[in-house]
Image (cartoon, helix red, strand yellow):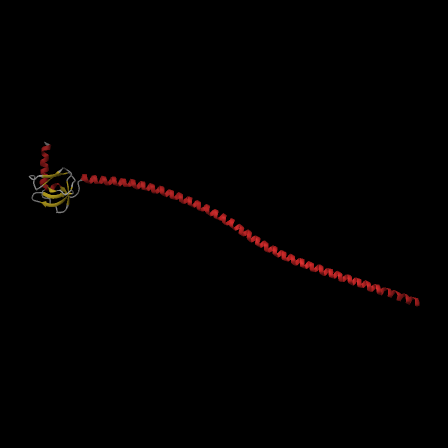
Length: 227
């Protein structure tokens, strides 16, 4: 009984939707409640071109308000007439749900890819940070070695400077020693000369005394004899 009343209900709904006006060029979608017959003309007496599944997207080319049919074109290029009441302004809920599920799956896949990318970037960041730390340690070690090399290179320069100063000091001491030796030699010569002069004076004095003293004694004796 219910099955027999279903066509009547569909017919009543069809009558209620017959007066719907569709602007030409607007996109329409086949309702998701059933398959729709695409016919060659505006009536059931025309041959069926094909059956359009629920949710099929069509382009509305023409609307015949008197017959309640609309001429449409499928995405494959097939043209025909179908009842205007089977057209909707937006895709069917089932189609929208499938699209939403597809978008959700795509978003989840993208999120998974983003998560994998984030993990990869995190790992790469950790690796780069490790390399940076290693480079910092290497740079510190190189600076230490450079300081040691500079210190080692500075030691010969210091030794060279010290040797130069010592050489100058030795030259100064040798010069002073030469001057001291010259002064000592001059003093020896002067001393020898002084001693020679003193000896000669003593000798002369002795000779003079040897000549003078005998005479003085003889004269004194003569004077004593006269007395």
